[in-house]
Length: 321
Image: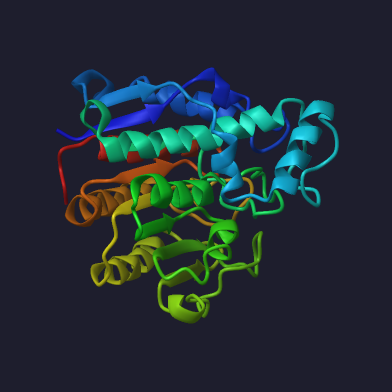
């Protein structure tokens, strides 16, 4: 039986930049509402886990202390920005961000330890892939992905990791921080940076030094559809076939779906369902079933609720394509 954990709790609602900001608490509320009607809730394949705070040392493994202290101070005043203008501060932003990282680490620990028989996990507020070691970026304060990669290696001795990112925005905060790491395999489908923040992720960027060839950037033009996504994802399938890894991290931002207010792509939730099915099977084939999903972006609440629920349903299914 494939059991999947989903992190659910009011603490995650606090990672919100206000009702008028694209990243607000209504996103998670929409997902949780959809999740309550999930078939897996009634089969016993789905377990809900409460969020937890990250240990500061875990965050400091990725982020510079000076930046962490800056977020702490900003969390008290709640004014200004944590970057050049995309990521506003608010009172309590430090703890809210620590819950994001802590919940991704909880998802990782749960999967690796197979707690209560759980083999997959999903953190809807995770996937903050723009934060750099010394700065916020693109609504991302602390990079839970980077922290989780380093934690997986130190705590669980999982050296080789596959990171797949289908968010419409390029995952620059992960890609460039691990660009010369030969043991982190990255495959990133995103809208071409010529048209969308952060303006990075060209196809020619495949890693540096010993890591050359371990990274795959697949930019798509505005207006790209499911057909274009599946064509790009077939390259990820080919890429994965020849490599070995011990953990899969799947950033499944839903901002590539038709109708998202911030992007220009036109996928349907079928793209998310397909990607989840392929990675689910690959995880069982190559990484002992270990896969964690992270919500990432998505600013049309109906879209993200549907797409993320598709991912969870696949993770909780016993069917492997």
